[in-house]
Image (cartoon, rainbow, N blue to C red; front, side, top):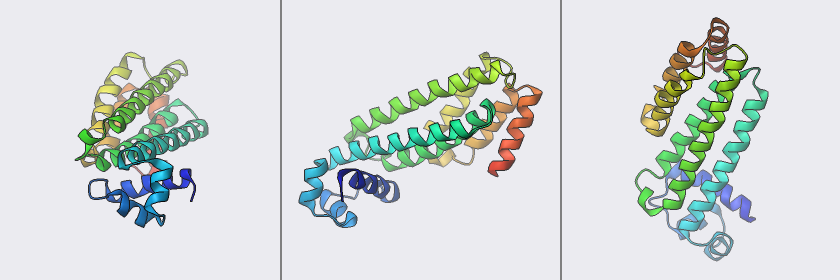
Length: 192
């Protein structure tokens, strides 16, 4: 197992089981590698957590780029990237919910990623305004406050977050944008 495979497997393990009850020996056993090989490849548990979260965030970036590139218009890109980010951040929040003070670099990396995503979504929102799907950029502030507040609140609000997203997008949209948001919502099978 090479370093990247270890990081991927560790990230999946942390997402599935959390991090609190896992020590390096248990992690190595669950990954099917020796503790020595794991330590040589990624360092101690803290370094493994940092590197595996960085790996997970890199994968999220690639997924979001693909989602945006495959979207037919800015409304679809805004909605699909927002839902994808919500799911990813919900998992990561759970993974470190009780241990955040022990992993400040992880918390910082997740916060930086959240800020980067907000900037990307602001760009998508502006494109939606320019293309006539959204009423005006002033509505982005509302989107940012209502949607991202739910995303950063963690998984307990997962079922509420898409409703907030669609409510804010529909309220910020032109008639063309509302129709497109409804099409995307139905295609995704999300309650509105």
